[in-house]
Image (cartoon, rainbow, N blue to C red; front, side, top):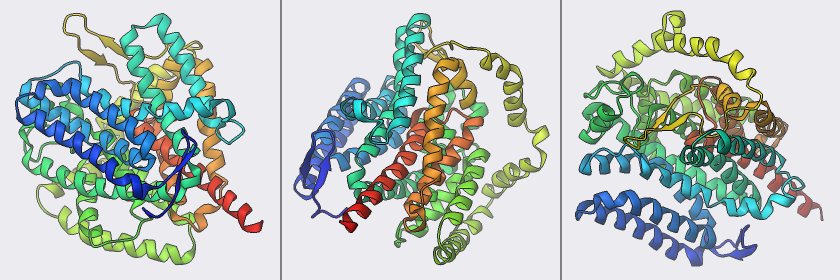
Length: 480
């Protein structure tokens, strides 16, 4: 970040100096980290289930008002690390079936609803129509959910659906400071690839006790592997394989757009190795699709640089995949591409569509938000029924009346971003577009519009939209 800049706070509509406020922002973040560590080690770990979300929300509000750039980074890191904190707390004080600590990232992102409410009346005129349409679809699902479903699951589902949209809208409305936001997101995801990639390799080799405990209690053996060394599908610091693979897919694509430092080699090695160990074939395909899109959108000179980067990364990663038992795991998963008809995962998803597609498309009113969540009255545990398809989930939850504006907003956003030419001179725009489009393509086989996957889908498309508006504004000022 260029600290001598004067940036703009879109909510307060006031300018601020990051250099002057950076110290106080980092002190607040460090205080949050130290408070969490202190509670964990001095006997108040159980209290963290309440303290952690509340403290994260307080920090988010402070940063949102005082240092919006740090708020963006803090938001992403809370998404990246909270599931690991939850597993550590569960391992220390016992399993919590309510999973209440996992609400922290949603609360942090939901702070940006202040931007949404402030600019909602004029959003369509300023280019934010896609976000307005999508939010109207979610609001419809919320109203239906209130009628048909239990209040707690409806509220929880509202956070799931709405948080990505309002956070993306917040990114878009800060288009004036697009270069600073771009740099912040590049740096954040680079360090995410390095740190979570390293932990992912450690998780696969060692199978830490807190990860084994979580896997045994959650009973997600089918999707996450066996609780033994070299038996897990890597999910690193996050709560399951799919979200982690999506985050890595995003970070690895972004690494093509940032300046390469001496840490790029270990980041690539850990990142790509963990990416392979997730065994997430859809994300492998999404990464490849993203690379092709980035390659097609840049000039010939940049294409040569990207080819060089890919070759160097391959030299770092390929030798590591030759080590047993890593090679066996990766090879077996790769071979499944040649025989998808016999693959159990492919059969399950095909059967899911065969059973539910016609049912979903004939569900005009929808079941409302919270329809895939049920609360066990005896244990208080929130059970989730996974639809395993974003398209089916939209129609089951929102019905035609909600899915049309929601999908209309998403399609409008995609069409707009695809027509922009800024990717020819700004590699980040090409990467953001590729990330958003590959995430949309994966909606066929996952509910990628929710949780951290939704944050990525909507957030990076919003950044491409913000870049277009920023460069338009710069061009107008140049010709004046």
